[in-house]
Image 1 (cartoon, rainbow, N blue to C red):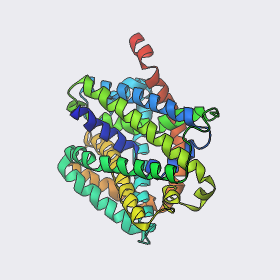
Image 2: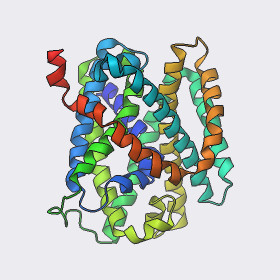
Image 3: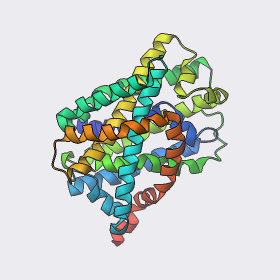
Length: 336
């Protein structure tokens, strides 16, 4: 159970980043009439994670390529190898830009937030992969607890009904691109830790637990955003539209948690990138991290919401092939 929870936090930490925790990503895909879409997402997510982790465990992999080769087939491996690398690179840039946007909310210069994120990432990987696994176990419980607390408090204060529109589910197809968007980085991250997984029991604890938790949080979060839909255009980070109803102390507390959500996802993205690079370049992990981060700095000038608005829907659609392969895995794998 303890090992399963450790992997569950790694999965959730990879998924809850700047886009998700800020509400921007949820609003991009869900919104009105999306209850069924979120339920399907939770189911697809658990199943997909289970397939990825099982393959990673079977191959005892240290980077994502062996797992990717099985999922998409040898012919498509080269294309998706490049795509995963570019995805991790650009979404890590989104996380770093998100750190800058979080700083701006408190009138700090944009580049201060970016600089703090870069230094924290370099320090984390001084301890190799174990640093990321350890910090996830400390950061994620208060992060999830704080986010759920704010969302439930907002639901109670505004007297919102959680199931008032359950008959209206026309947006159910959004489950597919949203799940696909979040699955690709998990191939990279979970593919890098296959040699550290000890049993199949911890795999299912991690996968079912992460799917259930993310499904519940997504539903409550989306329901809250629907109530303030008219105000969301005014905010770079939709979560702050919810927090405007509360004292400044709560805004500061949640902003710190938001920054840590951004940090854990950026760290997961860097893990996927540098473990792949290390298979070609025999250099210390921290050195590869430094060089990678330096190349990302110019792209952060594009801004957080711009990156999320354009990149996430594109990747969500491109990754549908991977999601289809994962959901139908028992059928085609037996034939193979």
